[in-house]
Length: 140
Image 1 (cartoon, helix red, strand yellow):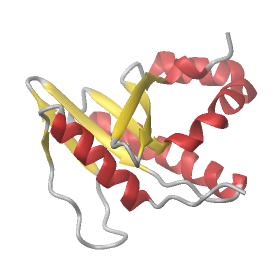
Image 2 (image 1 turned 60 degrees about the vertical axis):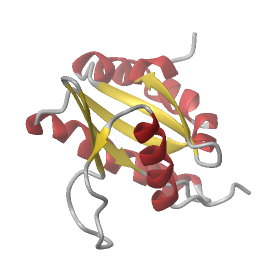
Image 3 (image 1 turned 180 degrees about the vertical axis):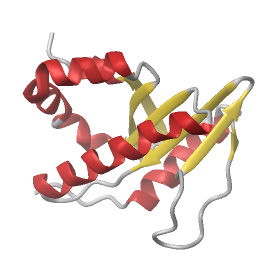
Image 4 (image 1 turned 90 degrees about the vertical axis):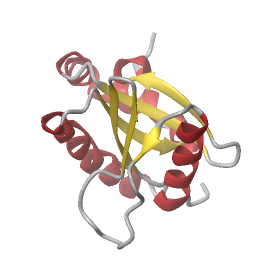
C-alpha cells in the first residue's frame, strides 16, 4: 500500500524549491481549511498560482482530490496567474499516464484550453520539483 503524504509536507517542499530558484512567495496560510490559493510565487513577470495536494492511500480519495484541485487551479486565471499549477507528491506519477489515457480526448482538450496548466511532481525528501505541462502525461 502507498504511503500517505500530507499536503502540508508537499507545500513545504514546494516552498523550499521555489525559494531556492529565487521566487518571492506568498505567506503560508495559518488556518486549516482556509480558502484561497496555497502558494503564489512571483519572479519577474511570472506569477505562479500553485494548488497543492497530498497523496492518500486509496485511489478514489486521490481521484477526488485531483478533480477538486483541477477546478481550483484553473479558477486562478481570473486572479492574474501566468501559470496554474497542481503540485502533487512524486508517487502520483504512477497514476497520471493512466488517468490521462482514460480521459483521452477530454484530457487533450483541457490541455489545449488551459495552456497555463501544469502538473508538478514534488520530491518531498529532496525538495525538488519536476515541472510538466498538462498534456505531457498522455501516452506516446
